[in-house]
Length: 360
Ligand SMILES: Nc1ncnc2c1ncn2[C@@H]1O[C@H](COP(=O)(O)OP(=O)(O)OP(=O)(O)O)[C@@H](O)[C@H]1O
Ligand SMILES: [Mg+2]
Image 1 (cartoon, rainbow, N blue to C red):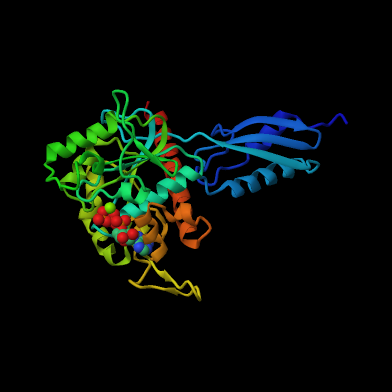
Image 2 (cartoon, rainbow, N blue to C red):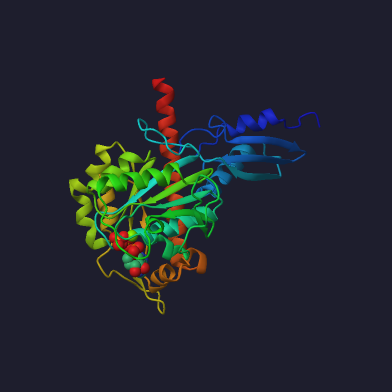
């Protein structure tokens, strides 16, 4: 009696809790809301910078330690988790999509490394974590996102804007929707430019936390013009162990540096084979190159995905493995990488907003 704990006292303890990736305390970061004290129990809301946050349990531990360290008499601390995704876009360009908080380009040094497969699974994993997610299939040469999402046509649009298709909680649009029957088009630069512009400006995306863009493979003119058109938060690179050498080349990364797009990380796909019977891992193409390249290039390594028939079948059947078998180790690899990606985006946005404050 007489010494009851107040909300102010709790806030003071919470000021000692450092967000593990943003390196500032959670009170300064404005992440704490609705602190309530009821006898020996405390409840509070923590607003994360992404619902896919990989560090919830770490934050929970730090809150427990800080508050109970100061006030050992506390019994229970209940945290209500919510999120408000931070926004970030490389400046300079006209923002054709102001309702989209973050736009992430997925690229690869060469074709066939599983870029579209990875993009689809990451998009669906982010959506399943609670984020609002879109997917733009900007691969003019082989747009196959609709097949992988199990939808072949966009809905009929009623208004002035184009309605995106929606599948597995992800809104998406594809170059494939622009092509009548299966006739391949020879794309000329201005056509690509026009199509991408339309996909950004004339599609009814609504509010999105993340828009993932599946770029055509390689780092040529088409990719360059797309990265120049889209106000990007950052880019990720998908590689396979045997394609890693291409990444190392200046050409691979130079494109993003040229247009000042930050690299959010590298993913190694078809990294190893995990035997379904004995679970032994076999490095079919020698694995680990992606991680080594990431270290050398000083870019975050987001993780590795095994080579697995179930992943290919997921793509062929329009039922990505994170939906069809979410408990499988393959799906968990995607979910973990999606979290890492979301965390990198939060870190980048925190850093650039700090920069903005300094420079204003
Ligand atoms: N981890 C994996 N395990 C098994 N098969 C995979 C894996 N990743 C991708 N694949 C398969 O490899 C093939 C190529 O993948 P995908 O189309 O995603 O590559 P891409 O890099 O987008 O190719 P493109 O350059 O043609 O756009 C597909 O059949 C896909 O199902
Ligand atoms: Mg592809």
